[in-house]
Image (cartoon, rainbow, N blue to C red):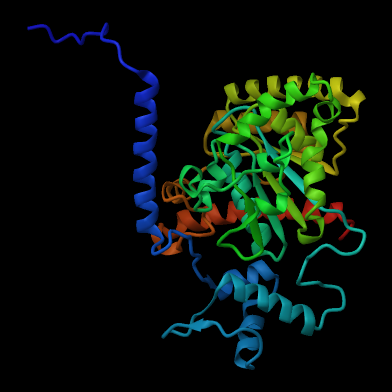
Length: 401
């Protein structure tokens, strides 16, 4: 009996992968409907008074005192007396403190002030699996939870950042930033493609496969009879953002894991760049090639006005396991080479973050009770240290202490 499969039988590969793509999409939508019914929109858990105090920058006793005095938003109080607030109430509490706080120098609402420019942070890496999207998602959410007005832009056609915010591109039919970048008369304002998220203060421009069109159309526009727009492609994101400059404090861009026109356009619109790197030899080698290519391309288009003028850029070590000897050596190697450009804190590898991602959630969304306490707290501490350090760099760029 011949058990060897007949490899000579022809089949329509394109039809089969389309069917499989649709099958996966349908199953994912079923899971989404189960997770956040009835309208498949994500909700958001409540935050304990300990978390609220930490995000706002006051003591837990101060939060308790405000509530007992009948001031500020009313939290939900459990039978054991524990207080919890929604994210919206946390913003309201922040506004109350800003108005009635006794401090003459501390501002609890960290919005941009007169003369402070919009900060645009691009999160980049040439190699997939570096934690780029996870970093961008948690950073954007942390900035929102600490009172900033944030716009997240998913610039990766794979749309992972969009998925983390409950958006399934092939079903939700949301337009992407491509609509504000395209070269024809159908171009739209970025205002038309922004949508809210489940985090108050955080909006998103979702991604979809149409973003890839920008990679094909830009070189054609540069060689057309009217080449001005194509040759100045790198201004398109910065020009789009001018239309919403007054609505946000910080923009976080999740760039695609490739050095194409989308990434170059994002970088030239940026005021800062965060390069994620996994501390493994192959990843360091890949990053080396990425930096050499990026530097060469930016140098060659600098003459056309595509200079990248940054307030700061940093390398962020992600998925780090401190007990892994070779990883610790690689981190030491990077710190020796780029000490001033390395974030002082690393994003530790954690099953809590990866397990949350299975249900298309971030660590800021999941309930603490779903994890072993030590695992959750270790991951959250690492996350908050990294994001607080980046927030500090944003405030330094504004000239704040």
